Length: 348
Ligand code: NAP
Ligand code: 3JM
Image 1 (cartoon, protein in one colour):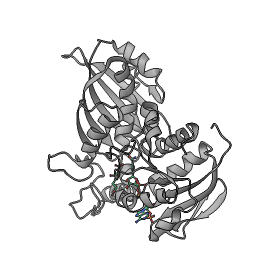
Image 2 (cartoon, protein in one colour):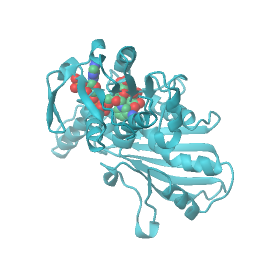
Image 3 (cartoon, helix red, strand yellow):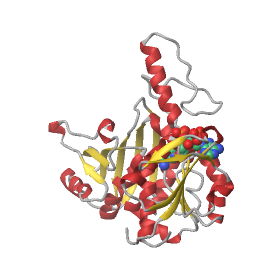
Image 4 (tube, protein in one colour):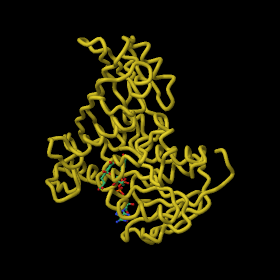
């Protein structure tokens, strides 16, 4: 960190799955905090949370919660961000928003520091953190874009339940227990915790994350498609996505097919290129059965890449398997890296 200044930090959604990891990341990475304000809905107001051996009382998030706040991390859903982020900016805070509320706004930078840190320079008070599935994919795509150019990406995801919040994690365990004991189950959170139909996640795979759009894609799939083009500054990139929820607690996996524009690198050259990129660990040795697994990615900061293969029909086609902790690089870590970059660039 370039300065000795400390910052008043607020977390909106501090009691959630992402909020918990934001606190871990701020502590582990020693972000220079002066005062810490923990915010939630009315439901959790009064709850006690310990951060670095000090106990904090969670407060209900309100427009006036942001007086004297320098940086506010939002992870309480899009509607809360829409209601409160501008209020926070009015009070002088810089907002790092983990929801989809502002990501595609052309005036709001959408940032993965390893890829487009320079976009932070143009911020107007709000910075958007991309969707978890987008982040791990663009970290792996960026070295290929730089070296060879990209023309097409087709991704299928295998996403963990923790991406849908603490209630979804509980639902997976409760259903699993009930099924093993021969009892009835009553799904009420997944695939979408609204008044739509709900399906069993235990021992299942659900090809729906977030609501359907009129074009037949889900909103999660459209997030991956649109956010990838914005972050990589490649509006013409062809992207297709299929997003699937699996009964994995944490760690999103992705099967990604990429077509590069120029060159015909060997698998070995691709491995070397990815190995030297920031934030990537290559785990790729079929003979030793070495490949990324979500259980091994939990609690780690890196994006793991393996199963790198050349397409059998297209010279410019590459297949790979990308895994990362969806709550860390996919959410909390990326947000804290954005804050660190703002400090480093004296933009906070
Ligand atoms: P979660 O475990 O369900 O937690 C939701 C959090 O939001 C809780 O702290 C909850 O407080 C708070 N909250 C709910 N309604 C609120 C309100 N009206 N005012 C203030 N706080 C409110 O969900 P999560 O997994 O942490 O995700 C939270 C949000 O982060 C998601 O909705 C999503 O927008 C975003 N997210 C982003 C990524 C990413 O890819 N970057 C990944 C996951 C999530 P209570 O304890 O009071 O209910
Ligand atoms: C991940 O607004 C909401 O109800 C939250 C939905 C949600 C999102 C989102 O759209 O912000 C749940 C989980 C995300 C995300 O990161 O895109």
